[in-house]
Length: 256
Ligand SMILES: [Zn+2]
Image (cartoon, rainbow, N blue to C red; front, side, top):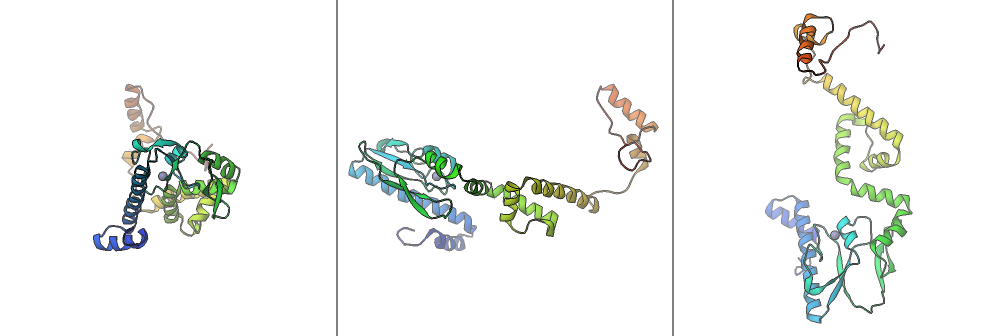
C-alpha cells in the first residue's frame, strides 16, 4: 500500500470488496501490516547507519495502549530488537514508533495531543508517557472522562444497544449521552439501571417464554401448610439443606 500510495482506509474498501471480509477487519489488517512495514524499514536503516540503540516512543494521547505506555521511553539495542516485544508494532493498531538514541543527545521535542483541543503540540523530548499523563491528563477531569469513554467503548456500545432494545424511547438518545450518564451522573445512572432491570422483568412476564399457568399440584410443594410442602421440606431436611423456596399467602398487599 505504501508503494501504491493509497491510504489504509481506501485500500481496506478495495480489499474487503475483493475478499468479502468485513471492511473493518480488512482495515485492521492493513493498518497493522503497514505499521509493520514502516517500522521494519526504519530498523533496516538503523543497521545500515550504524545506530546502536533506539528509544521506544508511544503516542502521547489517551488512546495509547497500556503496553505502549509502559514501554514508552525505554532504550533498546538495535541488535536485540524484536518486533512485538520491544520493537513496534506491539499489537494491532499500534501507533508507537522509535527514534535513534545517542548517549549524549539533548532531548529536543516530541509531539503530544492536547486533550482540550485535540491538536498536536510540542513537549520536551525527554518527557515520558507517564510524566505527560500526570501533567496533562490526571489534573484534567474532562480528559480523564474522555479516556474512560474510549477505553470502555466496546463494552459500553454493547450495553447501550441492550438498553436501547429494552427501554426504547426511554434509553439515552446517543451513545455519547449514554456514556456521559454512566460516568458523570451516578444518580441518573442508577435510575437507568433500575429501569432497565424492571423493564426486562416486565417483558419476560409479557412474553410467551414465561408460563402464566399455575399447576396447583406442582405449586403446592412451595406453599406452606400443604402436604406436598411438608413432604418436599422433609427431602431437604434429610440432606441437611435449606429449602424449599416457599410462598406464603396472606392478605397483606405488601411485605408484612
Ligand atoms: Zn501500541
